[in-house]
Length: 305
Image 1 (tube, rainbow, N blue to C red):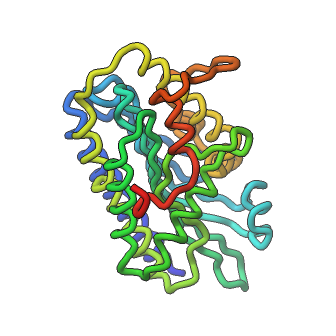
Image 2: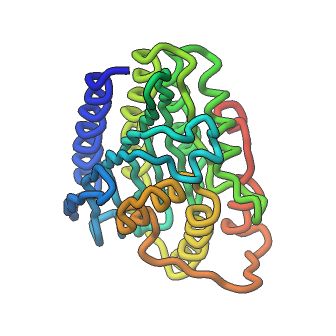
């Protein structure tokens, strides 16, 4: 692994952040991303971009980070014991967008690269990433479009990748304490290093480049739909599940906090407003009830809708 390859990845990620922010700004039609650059005391830094109270997005963040250090965090060595005693470089782009309109789904995407090295040993490296959709009032055509884009992005690399990464996404974004998925899934992969560097890097780029193709048409179809207090209250209640996943189960959040990352940037994925209600129950046969009964479990979205 060369310094040139690490710089290749960083250049791509910085450009991807620019492209995604430009696409989301155009779709929003009213807000702008404010940039906040930061340095990590232990090594590295990043640039966080946040849009607040826009035309579509109540709040959303698109962050780039590159952190490095001479000691692996506990969360990483627990997952990969062979990383103990190595220094590391980790860089990525991660984003979460929380629309104001409950009919526009929340979306998340992340692409990342990790390398750990020590003297007299081969480097350990991998790529990871994915994107997933969290609707509050799902539409079948939106879900099918989202998964079709995911399928098409990976098809050049083999027919096995989409089903593999789709299942990985369903498994990863599973709220064990609620026995439901966070949303309708998409793609998730980690530890990708079973191919040559260039092909692995190309797979990560294909996923990163597909995010806007998957999300922008959904925004356009739903952003002008009228909604009332009932829909808004349900959206805030379901956002609570998003918070629960990120704080209880998400490995990226834990890695960022344990490596001394910038807390504001790590937690910018949180919604600006959310609510919890003890003993909440949906009305039978309502749109709110159908979210749980019909959508918050793994399904073959391309063939069942």
